[in-house]
Length: 226
Image (tube, rainbow, N blue to C red):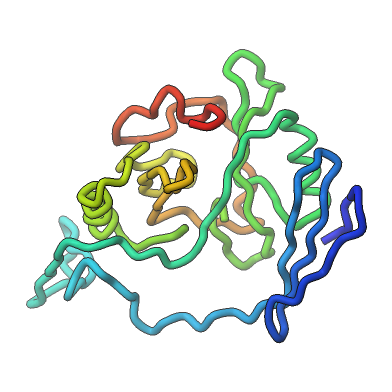
């Protein structure tokens, strides 16, 4: 990480015995936080669940690895295993992309350009460059499809507002389910996303459908405050 151009002296906050956070303001008057030194959480040996008692491997048309065992699901929330990514709309796309890729080890997984102007990039997904190690295509992650669908019904039964989903994205390939949180932000639950490394490269495509299947994207989905 390089120290980017900032408009004030950065402040340093100790979050735990070993983890710290640096906070600084950018030239556009937004604040940026960098957390470092945190201790990695040990991965559970078994996947936690609130939607099933038993779940084995999926049986496919020509291979049946789940034999003599039943799958038993019940209503419940789809558990969140980690924060996956964050997205926002910017007034100057090219400068923002340059700022993140120049100052941090972010690299684009995919870049989308305008259908009428091939030199006008309008959207990107970025991941952490871990070299040969694999990273999520765009760095909230959940489990396989069934808990995802059960979780959708669970949130609907509690009166929460569905924004878009359930469906399958083109870019990133993940199953998605967008909801509005109490503050009005869009929260995407997703599962089964792509992982990439430096050998994968950056895909560049024209703006196209955002999903392979699922409901139509809301017309105000990308608007400010929507």
